[in-house]
Amino acid sequence: MKKPIIIDCDTGTDDAIALICAHLCKEIDVIGITTVSGNVELDYTSENTLNLVDEIGWNIDVVKGKAKPLSRDLITASHIHGRTGLGDVVLKRSTRGFYDEEVASYIYKKAKEYNGEMSMLTLGPMTNIANAILRYPDIKDFIKEIVFMGGSLKGGNVTSVAEFNIYVDPEAANIALESGIPLTMVGLDVTEKVIMTETDRDYFKEFNNPHANITAKILDFMFKRSERFGREGALMHDGLALASMVLPELLKKEKHYARVETEGKITTGMVVVDKRRFAKDKKNVDIALDVDVNMFKSWMRDLICY
Ligand code: BDR
Ligand code: CA
Figure 1 (cartoon, rainbow, N blue to C red):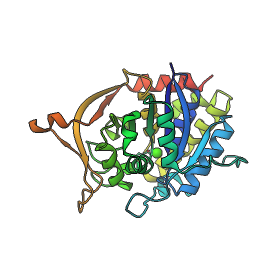
Figure 2 (cartoon, protein in one colour):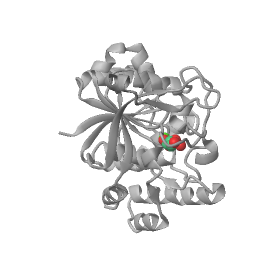
Figure 3 (cartoon, rainbow, N blue to C red):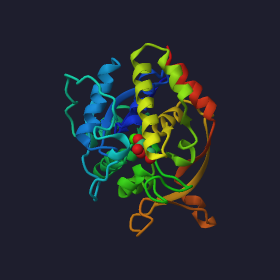
Figure 4 (cartoon, rainbow, N blue to C red):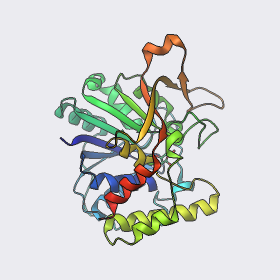
């Protein structure tokens, strides 16, 4: 049976590649896509998502989510992803509209409809799922698991200790961590190990299909960006989180009790793991610590290069 999932994203260069893979992935049934502010503002992340799914011929609900974190001002990463979020990649403007429902209610309704079998994959700040948990506390009995791209135990990418998705809305991440829903954290500890090369990009270029074309264009932009910034190569953060849902051997994980710092002067957004003995009954999240990079790359190639 295919895994029913909602993908929540802030499209975004690497989010876009994750969506391209999700569309082609036979093991999952994407029920709908919800958008959130993060890499860039909500209007851009939402339009990028709609334009992208149209361009690859994917007829799927796209629900516009929250424009602001739960209780903070929005911080974006437009210096990394470009003003629109997709760098210099321009997609044809979609002519259809968003699925017209408030995001928390959409997630809750779908979770109930699928009777506990639905999973969530969050690829941006966790604002939408946190809103759903706050508004509908019994949702915890209807979501099978949340796999989230975010966090890091090894140090951050936006501050010395915080990863971007968690940093933007740390309160939302804590609500998810405290929810009782089974969680998997796919953070920088593994995603920064998956670096696409120009050889990888050239392989996609040989295949003339919409999925491969857009992937190659996005990778091109990522290489230009790396030259400019001297860091953040072509990392597949969000694609890796997706892949982990269908490749059980891809990641090595350890279960821990983790919370997110929300009040630190220099540590806000840091994922703090409590390994003391007394915390062993509180373990709330499987944390990915290592990855089989070749397995990921060949999975991505096999999907996109049809
Ligand atoms: C995460 O932040 C965004 O820039 C990426 O899309 C990814 O979800 C990595 O820290
Ligand atoms: Ca993202």
